[in-house]
Length: 445
Ligand SMILES: NC(=O)c1ccc[n+]([C@@H]2O[C@H](COP(=O)([O-])OP(=O)(O)OC[C@H]3O[C@@H](n4cnc5c(N)ncnc54)[C@H](O)[C@@H]3O)[C@@H](O)[C@H]2O)c1
Image 1 (cartoon, rainbow, N blue to C red):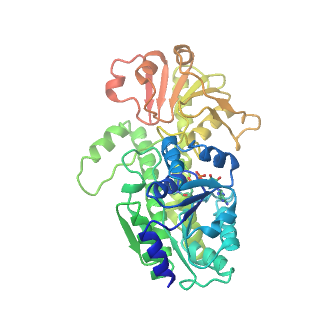
Image 2: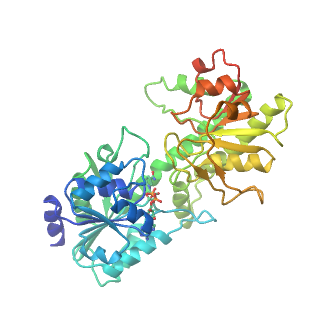
Image 3: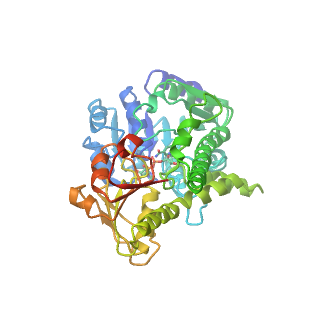
């Protein structure tokens, strides 16, 4: 039986693991398997990434180059653009992007492209696992028929499962090995073999009854975050209107030992997951005649935050008898969250765009991001790229307003408070103790 053949290969660390897509999700995963002694092959469409990885250079912050080099040294890992090598893989894990179309519908083109390659090189005896976040039904409605096109039969010839990725880039406490892995197969054999596979690299595996449950689980988790951040953003606006310190309120509420989990407001949501994933769920729900109102509302509140931040800036400048038009604004932090370089869907992009559309002169400092590009500028001509500025005393002093969009650790906030005339802090980076006796006027969300 194919189940037993694969179980033997996995148990003895002999199964060849192919990972398609070597980004934030695929690279940490393949390195874990390689360092556990499994032969691995990384498949990428980006030749530059392949060349650098084969030289031992990582492009992902959470995977140090030494780890890639170590994997190369064991001769258990190499990257390639040649998908013909899929034929030698016993396990194929898909970690390609799942973005949205302009219409906010799921863009399945990357999964379909990976599926086509798998179909082309499929052979009896393979386990295919999808890790890309997607709507419930993708694994059995989309991938299964594609693999069957190769003349193979589920359970007899191949196994198929979904296992969501939960990696949190930049989080040193939780990395691949200590984040419980949920797995759901299209059928019992697929679940069993996938669970065995992941138990080789993670401490805990949680098996569920189907791929659809595993797909829905991931979307539930991220929708939970999007909605709760939406609520925190709404509460920040309420507190602001009432003249109450939002951050002090959350801090106090978080002392409740049960029934409350703190979420924090900010300039909006970013990254490849939280702003996108709920749309995969609402899209699928709509096809079944159900309209998810919570998801729509959270989207509305969260996507409105950059405008709200720009209004805070405009009001603060007005208080100084300054117009937005012609003011010099320094943005601190443009990545979507602290201490990483990921710019995908970063709300700072919208903030900068809106500021420039109102005539502000915008510069930014971000130790992780050397340049920023604007593909969807609100105003024609305002989409010129920006380049990281060094955080000099002159830069801070000459700004009419400093906006903290991302609270990177490695920024000298006391110096900012000492030299800036006006600061809009969207992340509570300037704690009360820092602000004590500071000369700068500080406005917070
Ligand atoms: N980044 C995260 O924190 C995170 C967390 C959990 C889940 N996810 C999900 O995991 C999936 C991958 O996300 P990511 O952040 O790793 O994306 P990424 O953009 O960092 O990496 C994807 C990689 O796939 C490559 N690629 C694209 N098409 C390909 C193809 N046909 N064949 C081979 N390679 C291809 C790209 O060049 C890129 O290197 C998405 O579905 C995402 O929603 C991401």
